[in-house]
Image (cartoon, rainbow, N blue to C red; front, side, top):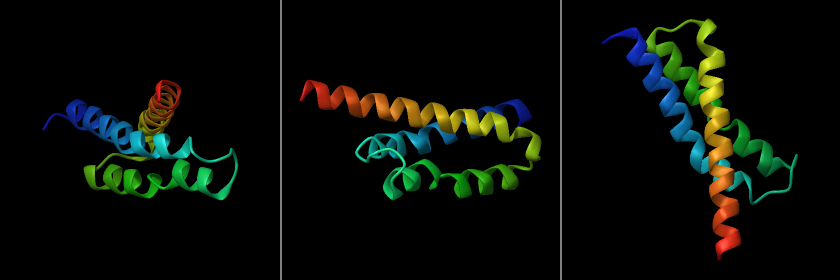
Length: 85
């Protein structure tokens, strides 16, 4: 498989994994244990996938960007659902 497709898939997977985490994170007050838990729980899994895919540490910013985007989008979905009932 082409390396570009693999890294794109890894970034997309990081985003998808963090969607429910960002959604659930919104239910907790900032900087509480639950909030930290949902922010960080996906990191070991994403690291494992990055290493198994054969990518070096230089690709961490890309996967981190995907994870942050997933957290933000998940939080936006939670807020929109709360507002609309």
